[in-house]
Length: 174
Image (tube, rainbow, N blue to C red):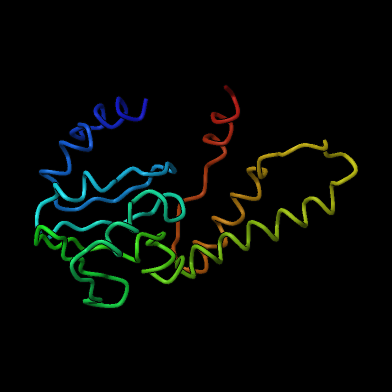
């Protein structure tokens, strides 16, 4: 399904063995283990860059890169240059760990503020409504998401139009 979605979105889809030979930058975000393996890495172009934003440090065979390379040196914080036995240089971001956490030092404060706001408003909602809520996993109520969005936009100085009475009526008519 994901391959079809990617193809329909205009991306070129191919087996990893084929992609390894032609790609320059590889970023995994699959949630699956062993996506980029030794047999792919040794066939990559000299100077290829590898990063993972998917699931722990299991998507890229970083163990092979870091332990079996002829040499490994940190060329800048969170970027290792691994010289393979065949002489090719492969660059590994954050030792194959989640790049958005390891190399980018976490999530931006604006994103964290919205996440914490959403969590706090959800806790307050549960405290207020706990007697009438079902004992199950529930989605955050839309009014909470809307309040977080309104507050975040206001804090950033972003102004938007308000819905007119006609728009509100139309929106609730179907």
